[in-house]
Length: 116
Length: 198
Image 1 (spheres, rainbow over the protein chains, first blue to last red):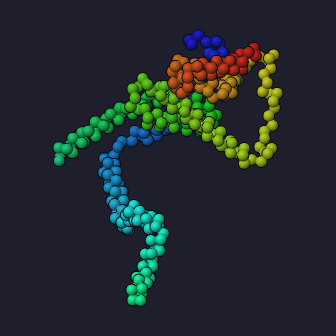
Image 2 (image 1 turned 180 degrees about the vertical axis):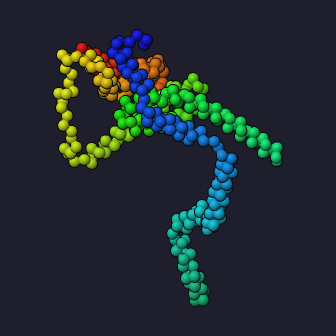
Image 3 (image 1 turned 135 degrees about the vertical axis):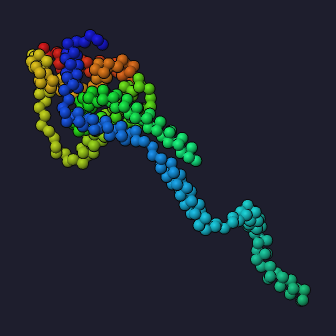
């Protein structure tokens, strides 16, 4: 790309001219922009940053612990499997369930027949 | 304990020295590219303030991400950052335009553009022939601004910055084939605007 058409050379010359003859105000703004970018990006790590980070992490841990301890204790879960199985057996035997519900009645009835 | 503090202080001093040296090298590098970066950004976005903001953003992004990379890698990395900032700017502008169009009532804000003014006159002399000095500069500026973004970037990076095709592709984040296509179209469009009307 060393040999260009004349119009390409003209374009490149113009671009170089623009680069060389930059306005003083623009140059000053560029300088400030460069310094700001360097300041922001290369800001030295302060010695207090690590202790601050550790203190923050500790505070967050303590807060989460305190919240966990203050939560109301959930009731112990019922033995779902066993009670569920028992309930199922009772439901399956509809007649027996009825018998259990009227147990007192049947006991009384039996007593009556014995007395009679 | 005192020995540990001394050791830490010595480490801090060494760290500061390294940072100062790095800052000096970065400052020198950015100083060598900033004017061309501003020219490129201004061609892409038009407004000087927007262009300066883009250059500052690109410097910040470059220093944050690539300051510790070997210095030979800095030029393509810097141009890559600037190119992506320019693309981001165009994306934001395009979203803003869409919303503006969405909320604007029909017919409002339409500009009266003379369509004939945009048509090239094949008999008239080309801008570079009929003009000198400032006029030639304006003609070149207008021709470069009229290019689509990717074509302009391909032209500036390949022809002005002197990257090879692979380097240009790396900076633009596209394939070498795309670079060749963009460059061919850019050269064709520029030639037509600046030379064909002779």
